[in-house]
Structures are given as C-alpha cells and as structure tokens.
Length: 80
Image 1: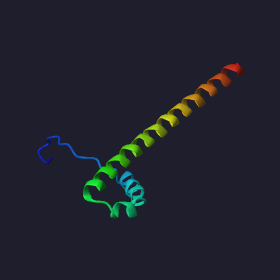
Image 2 (image 1 turned 180 degrees about the vertical axis):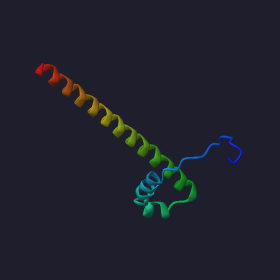
Image 3 (image 1 turned 180 degrees about the horizontal axis):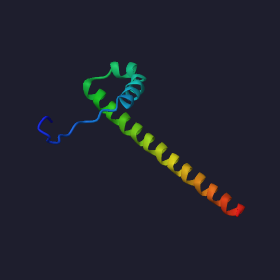
C-alpha cells in the first residue's frame, strides 16, 4: 500500500475462466431445465470429474516427458 505495508491480492486466471465457461456452456440446455438444487449438484459433480480429468492429463504429460528424457539419456550413453 502507500505506507509500504505488504498486502495480499487474489490472482485471477481469466484464460482458465474462459475455458471453464466454454466447457460449462456445453451443458447449457441440460442446466436450463434443472431445479436450483439439481443445478448445483450437477455442476459440482461435473467440476469434480473435470478437475480429475485435467489432473490426470497433467500427470500423463509429466510421465511422457520423463520417459522422453530417459530415452534421450540412454541414447547419449550409447553414443559414448
């Protein structure tokens, strides 16, 4: 702030928000016909599944990158 005191700010990832809004938009016709309670439950469950899917994809990417690095190291060792 103006007095030199640190303060916390929330970071907001607008790109992630846009992607999530786009993904949720695919369920718009289903969501429109739901009661508020069903809407909240459905959205919650879909977000849980989506989060698990994204995390699994990230883990797969890390595994692939690690395997590729190991293969490169093996190739370099064979050349020596």
